[in-house]
Length: 494
Ligand SMILES: Cc1cc2nc3c(=O)[nH]c(=O)nc-3n(C[C@H](O)[C@H](O)[C@H](O)COP(=O)(O)O)c2cc1C
Image (cartoon, rainbow, N blue to C red):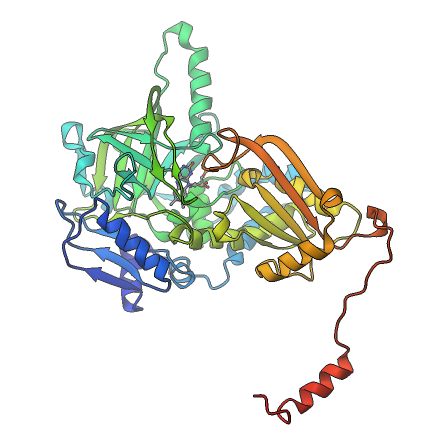
């Protein structure tokens, strides 16, 4: 049975020795974040529930997804590629031909699968409903993570918005800087769907301005502490047009339960811990940051729209879920690795020659990706890299390295060997200038714009301009291997 809530997961993590409760009083200002970071850097440490938070009645849960083992428990998978395989299977139900046929099929999935969300009238998240002056962000134990941060930030809120035309629901994890008890700043980067929804709505309403329609705010609900599959869905770069609640149902193999919000026209998971309802206002732009980010640097201040609170609905005794970022490798790296595994089948759906794919966590995921392919024709490595640069959030990847299928993309020694023995820099590197970059990239010449490099580290063929004699791999012959293997113990080796 999939987890219905965050607290169900806490129970199981505790049973399995994967959670510790801290009863000592801790301060959400800097102290909690430093404890969480130390635990993560030490590796193989459990999730942590801070029960005694200075100045607050609400406990803080951290490092929840901070190991492959915990993510396996949370998502009930030992092989995360099964998640992607389920999506691929669903898209193959009608066997449309061509990329566009497949893409058009995606929004239809909710009608044809059991994984769609179930709508119910009430749920635990509505045990306490606080509106008007009672809705107060300062009641939440929100962390300040680094001394240089501009303030306190909600880091693990799942921001729900609806596409203004299609009404497909999106959910993204976008951090929020607290301004006061009613206002925060919504850090949805320009390439992300929340920002896109707001832009579409702004356009629609600007067209109507002559008729006196000036309100350009978009309804948003921020879910803090949902069931683990829903939390994962908010981080996952799902294909354009797919409802994130449906994706959550696909991950957990059962649709999630939703309830209507109290003050905005949106639905949220009925079993969530806390939901912040409100509006994101493009006409109230605030300066967000600096914030110590997952690149390891402070992201400098930039303008983002404000989030204006209209209601807090929550359980009677809610748990505040948070995460901390900083120089890799922290909790988000483990989540990223599940994305890497679960999206491989989807990458293969559009680029069938891809054998494996890796996003090394030290390169903060948008920095570098390595792909192995089974090459059939000249120039194919470049075709794959260009295709991936056109696929959703992979468009933000700064560097791609493509290797042959005999190279293990998860072993940097093998990748570096291939890169240095199968690549001629002038012939095999492609550069793209003035392309979209991750907003967090500390080295791009401009915010959101910079260059990319694709390294074709596959063995070159004569048709690819390699006119020298092709050198043969120096490999040990089978007879010698067998002979030495048989005598191994005779030499005195264990
Ligand atoms: C801990 C954490 C914090 C994140 N913070 C942000 C953020 O502040 N802004 C942002 O645009 N993306 C952030 N992301 C990445 C998005 O959640 C991710 O790209 C997601 O796929 C966005 O969904 P969307 O494409 O549906 O908008 C964060 C991810 C994690 C794991």
